Length: 522
Image 1 (cartoon, helix red, strand yellow):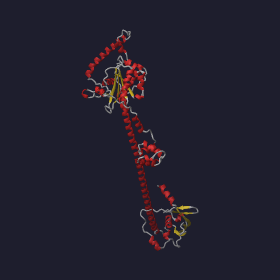
Image 2 (tube, rainbow, N blue to C red):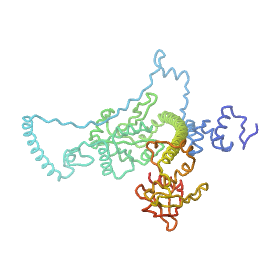
Image 3 (tube, rainbow, N blue to C red):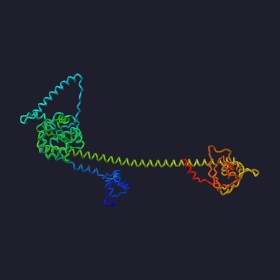
């Protein structure tokens, strides 16, 4: 098959051709542009359509595959039979693999105080006030002895008079975040504004962050009272190469420090078997020991030179970095798969929502059509009923109209009525003076029935009016000069309203105006 824009369609499988046909029918995109987009979408039509209309971001599948391709590979081990036998235990049993110690999660427990009974409180209060008096006297002597020269001044006096970073008295237990902020503030006051990125949070939060982001947690525990602390910090921890290594984002290091005079750092030192200060250890996730296990991969105890300290940390990081990279790539692949499922579900939900909307609109259109049809049918039935009632009323009313007075009756009104109907034309008739205007309207309404023969009149007339029907005249009677419109009043008489004679015209009322009036009334 010929290629379209450099794309050979013959190389595609039947399923891929079907997906390409569905995609181009919806988007009308060129085949040369549609095939690469479908390939990036794993030939999923719904995802490709969503990318076409919603915009295409970075390809997570390609990023995950690239991450997997760049996973550092461990160097293969090459050993001969002699080395294997030398490394083996007696009787051919291999040595067990050294497992790193687990890194427990330390959450400081709040201090609880118990109220003593009243009698015991009184007894202990005496000892408390006595101790306060003795300690006040002792501090007074210590303050006086502090003015002695340093060569003859006791070390106990010097230590007891210091405060701040090395002070041991009055350290109040704070929340983990506040404790970390106090440690960083005292560290900077003692050693200047350093660029070490201490984590400003509790130890449990730092451990959780390292576990979540797959980073290394470097724990540094210090005892200000220890002799090697100051030299370790200035010569090793604050050396330019160590600071640069910790600040390098490529090394994925989270630095957490603590003063063992604080409760949290003291609990960490106890749980992590700290036997000598200064103490450092490196913690990370060890997937070989367990998918969620944090382990201590390196301990650094005592004063070390900056080169040794940095080499030990680099060795441990290089050893466990491939495992973390593998877990990171696996998480990326899982996230990509999750995103793909989310996109598929989202595309399906959008398609389902569109189908539901079309079905709803179709149901609403059908309901509206059925309602309009029902309304038209009811209006037609109502109009037909009104027409029947109107005709029945006309036949009944024709029987109640008085006949024309004879020539001997002088109390009459002579009227000339011009009816718009061509067949009737101009009607001249005498009415009694007591005839009401409503009866004149009824005469005009029923004139065609009154002008028929008596036999036809008997056949067409009804003796009873329609029940519940109120007749409305669709015309009005008026005098042309001067123009006066006479309403169908049942009390006004022709003699009192018009006089002895008159020329009147019958004007039809336009139905549209009547319907507009009805709508305004509603």
